[in-house]
Amino acid sequence: MTERRSHTIRVVTYNVHRGRGLDGRTKPDRIAAVLQDIDADVVALQKVVGAGPRHGGHAEAFGAALGMGWVMAPTRQLWSHQFGNVVLSRFPIVHQLRYNLSWKTCEPRGCMRVDLDMDGVILHLYNVHFGTAILERRVQAERLASIVSDRRVTGPKIVLGDFNEWTRGPASALLSERLQGIDLSAHLRRRHTYPGIFPMVHLDHIYYQGDVEVEKVELVRSRRALIASDHLPLVATLRVAI
Image (cartoon, rainbow, N blue to C red):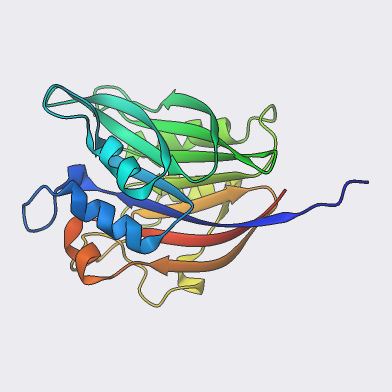
């Protein structure tokens, strides 16, 4: 019988708001500095500006600054640039899939699945950005739960991102039924992630499925992080059985 091992990883979810801070300045290098301070193994970002006619994109700059591999899943165009979700990782990225979560005429939304090679075992990470309408999120939660629960995809799974639910609504309730969720109140005195400098609600969440144990949860409130975006980074240290 093969002896099971575990891997401790540090993950972060962060809506970077196109690199635009609460001071009105667009400074992707400031976002990169926040991420460097966090020193995570896997980074899930939302609202990232990608490649286009004016520059190579913020995703490329983040990858270079952090020395990490990265992949992007655009959901739409912004100023003729790609725009969407990004995952950066210190583990090899062996596969990527994009899932369309768009609903009716609302802004296009998506989920990206990135498969990471952890010592020969695959960790599936789902980076999500839900919409702002309650009915939209309900449909997106159903789709996401079905995607993550696909039995053909085996092994540990981590689901994280900006779920845009201001209170515990139908999307949060459904996902909590289908997946294991990190209860921020069990780990943090201050749990709100939005808006950055004076956060009043938490829109950013981390769920998981499989043999995953939560060791620590952090909400980054450094002076730089409070101003760099309209969200604060949510960080978790997880022990994943492999």
